[in-house]
Amino acid sequence: MEPDTSEFYSDFVAQVAELRNDTKTADFTIACGPDVYKVHKLVLRLHSKFFARLFKNDFQEARENRITLADDFRRPVGGMIDYFYRFNYYFTRDFYCNNDSEEEAASRECEPRTGQDECMPSELHAHAYMYNLAEKYDIPGLKKLAKYKFATSADWLLYRASDGWHRYEDEKVFTRHAKEFLDVIPYVYKNSAPNDTTLRESIVKVWRGRATELKDVVKKEQWAELLEKCPEMGVDMIMGLGAEDEDCEKEVSK
Image 1 (cartoon, rainbow, N blue to C red):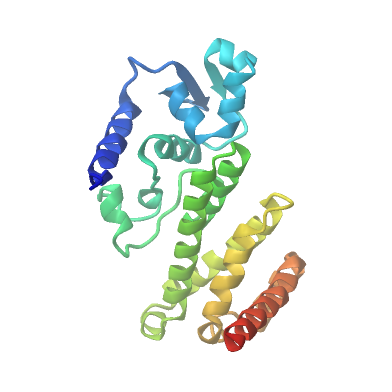
Image 2 (cartoon, helix red, strand yellow):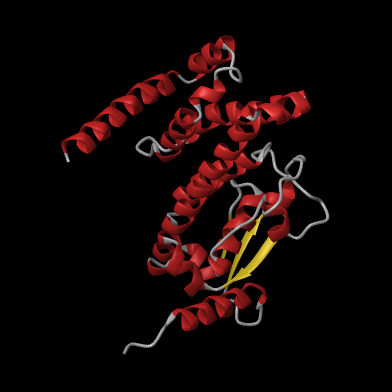
C-alpha cells in the first residue's frame, strides 16, 4: 500500500511559507516603490515562467540579483510575493474589518473600506488586477486563484445587492455593492489581454446566474451606459446564451 503523502505535502508547503521571511538565504530582490522583498530565485522560477526566463537567459536583472517593478502597484506585488510562498493572497483587510487577521476578515461579511492603491478601489478590482499581474509575469497558478477569487467576490456582491431584506434595510449598502460590480466591468474589458477572455466570461456567467434578481438592481439606463462603455459585453452575453443552448442540447441528446 502506498503511503498517504498529503502530510508530507502539507509539511513542504509549510516550510516554503517559512522562507517568506528568511532573508538570510534569499538570493534575489524585488523592489516596488518603497517596498523591498528579499526572495529566492528557485521559488520564483517554480511559479513564474517570466522569472524562469529571466534567470535562464542571464539578463541584467539576473546578474545584479535585483529587479524593480516600476510599472506595478505596491499592494498587488506584495500579494504576488505572498502567493509565491503561501500559495494564496489576501486583500480582505484592505477593505474590511480593520482589527481582524486576514483569515478572519476573509471569513466574515464586514463592511468595505478603501484600498491602499489606485488600482484597488474595491476588492473586486484588486482580484482583477492580480489576474492581470499573473498574466504579465506568466504565473499560471496565480491566474487560476485570482480568477476564482474574482468570480466568488463578484457573485457575493450580486447576492448582497439583490438580497431583498438587506437592500431595504440599508439602501446605501445595496447601491454600493451593485456599483462595485458595475464599476469593475469597464476595467476588465479595457485591461484584459487581447486573447484572454477569462474574467469577461466570469462577469457574464455571474451576471446571468443572477439575472432574475438583478432586474430591479440594474436600471435600464445603467445597462445602456455600460454597453456604451463596453460594447463587447453585449456580444459576450449573446455568445454566452449560445453556449448555454449548446450545453442544453448536449444534455438532451445524452
